[in-house]
Amino acid sequence: MSEFKPFDLNQPLFASSCSCGQHSSDLEHELASQKNLDAEAISANFIEASLVKALFPSELKRRAFIKSVGAGSALSVISSFLPLDSLQAMAQEKAPLEKKELNIGFIPITCATPLIMAEPLGFYRKQGLTVSLMKTAGWALIRDKMLNRELDASHFLSPMPISISMGLGSNAMPMKVATIQNINGQAITLAKKHIDNRDPSKWKGMKFAIPFEYSMHNFLLRYYLAQHGLNIDKDVQLRVTPPAEMVANLRAGNIDGFLGPDPFNQRAVFDEVGFIHILSKDIWNGHPCCAFGTSEDFIKQNPNTFAALYRAVLNSSTMARDPVNRPLIAKVISPQNYVNQPESVLMQVLTGKFADGLGNVQNVPDRVDFNPIPWYSMATWILTQMQRWGYIKGDVNYKDISEKIFLMTDAKKYMEETGIAVPAQAKSGYQKVKIMGKEFDPMQPAAYVKSFANS
Image (cartoon, rainbow, N blue to C red):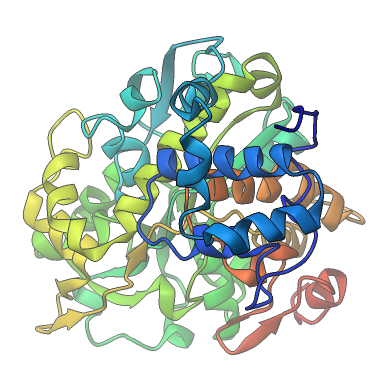
């Protein structure tokens, strides 16, 4: 038998390609063809394939071996004379966690679904973590608790890690966006008295609530109103209001509407005080909303814990993405210690079959989704809007900031390790999108900012 020699696990197991040309060997082709493998099975197969390379350093000998026994039985032949069970068990042991008990902040909205459901459904426990979910009243408090290190990680509005890292509105602390918690999942909701006032160009003098200055809600509402010819600084008022207080303020007449997170758009319909004017997906389909993140220091000090937390959230996001699971998720996150909303309201949001307050029942399955990929281009668009509306002064190094804060590379790594498909176009981390028909090219952000008349 050949003597084992060290080899680089980061290199392809085989130098030449398989028959389909998409894998580095016939053996990897065989492994890839095995559908519905769980993470442990994928890990086991990788170990066995690695042993094939160790046993047969020569590519020609590897090919001859596979040809003689068949790709489908190669691993079983090896297992007859190697202690694979022991080797696999060793490989599946994860590195010891630096910190097992974590405090994670969240705002009680459906955007936080993956973070919330991961606790009652056991995703954290499976990774060896004991998580305390800390319900928090507003975004400024989330920011302050992260800065004071009262929270280890948190549910964020996607722009918040950027603003905190840059010291906008607070002391600067380098933050990282590990995953996007949800895409879409917002709406513009108006008070019932505006049911015949659906033309945004006629909304001068109206007051709107947004949950935070550094929010997609703020930037999408500004974009939408400006595209309809309104001057945001003169024609309307934007008021920062905690999400849980938006419906009450609509009922009291303190605001005319809000661009807010669900379930409060649907709750306004449920309470018969408002109607859904437009879903945010109809402004930008696939836009980021909330994110899961932590500080750079936490990652440096607790790399194994961070990896475990990453896996837990990705697995939770994968479950949340499947429409089949949405009714169960609505039940799981509805209790008082989580979102504290009627299950029927959450069902309408999560399934996309909802009453709009205008007498219609709409069916929009992608009203909200939980795609975890933190595209660099998302961060770049956020930066263009911060610059457009004066939150950032002067020139902006879009690429550097986007790629330092949004952990696209890490997301792809952990998704692949967890067996979650990564789209081919995610290779660069950038993608062009259309927002109300206007193209955003993340490779030309400065030109994009200048293209707006009010910039």
